[in-house]
Amino acid sequence: MKPVQEMLNRMRWDKTWADDEFKIGYYDRIEKRIIVVAFKEIFFPKDDHFSFELIDQEGELHSVPYHRVKAIYRNGCLIWQREH
Image (cartoon, rainbow, N blue to C red; front, side):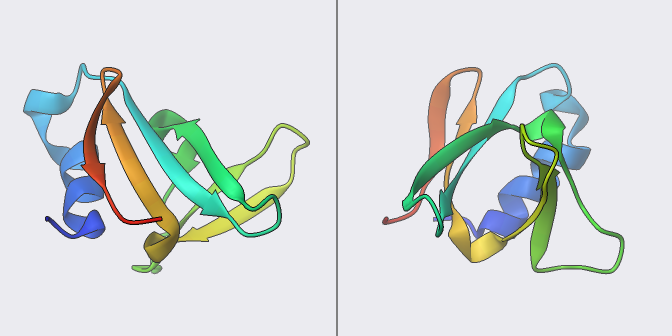
């Protein structure tokens, strides 16, 4: 299995994947469930190589460590998964 960082970098920079739709499933420790978000809704802090950030529906900022990413979907198909 490829490391999640490698997958995220490919999604960000690989021009052959530029038109594809990606979703990320991450484990939320508060809600105790997997939350799936569109890749275009997350952003990567410049000097942080261990997490990404997103703003939830209530406008709250969340920092999600890469180790909590559990699934990646490309055009609706699961392409990467880690044990829950």
